[in-house]
Amino acid sequence: MILETIAAQKRGEAKGLFSLCSSNPFVLEAGFRQAAQDGTSVCIEATSNQVDQFGGYSGLTPAQFVARVHEMAVAADFPVARVIIGGDHLGPNAWRQLDSCTAMKHSVDLVHACVAAGYTKIHLDASMPCADDMRNGQPYMETHTAAERTAELCKAAEAAHAAKPSGATPPLYVVGTEVPRPGGAQAGSSGVEVTRVVDAEETITLTREAFRKRGLERAWERVVAVVVQPGVEFGDADLFAYDSARARKLSTMIAHEPRLVFEAHSTDYQTETALRQMVQDHFAILKVGPWLTFAVREAIFALAMMEDELLGMRPGLTRSGIREALDAAMLHKPEYWDKYYRGNEATRLFARKYSYSDRSRYYWTAPAVQESLARLLANLAGGLPLPLLSQYLPEQYHAVVNGTLPNDPNNLILHRIMGVTGIYARACRHGA
Image (cartoon, rainbow, N blue to C red):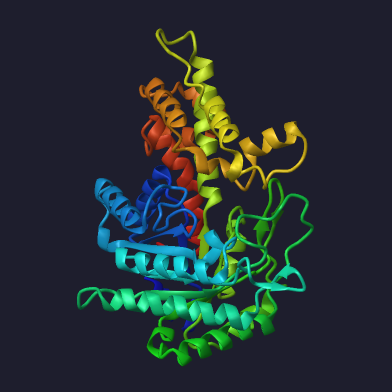
């Protein structure tokens, strides 16, 4: 599917591919449903801090992540052969506080483990400075150094692929990185700088040369995309919309590359029109993550509000307290949100619940949150009264009334997520 998308782009067709950057079970099931509906493959990616050889914040190694995704595909009756698994920002990101030698050793091991496990879309990103990458006392990374390290990571990926059985699908590569750093813009940002053409060209030139020096010419032929910043981002409550005019020079530049397109990160919350225009402008691979779990959170909070309304109407109903459980988990382990959310306590409380950055996505696997969620779903398993559904989930209400959606909490959550995946599918011309 990836190569077909690149080929279509080079024929002048506005075809794209969107990638789900999430391990949330609701998101993955919604992704399988969307792909089944459109008759396409589904691309699922794990970030380098989410899944690594030590378990990452998800607790999963690459092999365990692949196994879990495949198990979920089978459970959803979706063909495993149509599941593309990728790694996002594979490199020193998780170990940048260490010296570059140590961080790169971990990075090489990570990339090797990902390819060995079955990842076939590999974003190699060595752009972040490590503890000893300094200039004038400040963290600094030379572009040529990043290119050399990227090639070292590719060498590890190629070695892992060479060790696999004959006929195994070789990995496709994505290089480069966006600014600002991954994770969403900080609150109060006034704008996002579009990558300069000269910088994109330098990344391609230096990385190609670094590959050549290591005898990786054939691997370079499988580099399909370059990550740049097209000017889209989001903060806690801010959204920086795509402006085609600002990205025109970039778009023109990549159109002349025979095998390359751009990959755009942080495309969450853009309008369908904007996403369509990005695909038209050769940002052919669109990454989406927080918007998906934002939709999960929206649906679950709506269900919790309906649960409150039903207290006293359904004998034996014990309130789940899911919203309180989620916030308690975030307060108990603040490292995944504390440095991202600014302001006084009221502002930070609001952000923990409603921020576009959706740092709450890190906490759905907490045992207490899982227990509360299970109680919520059990409490509402008999379906919701239609007037209540109309009040809190109006889009899902119409689908239920029209007979296209079962009135149960799991399907309501999945339908809400597919409101997002459907936008991306249409923008990429899936099913068109």
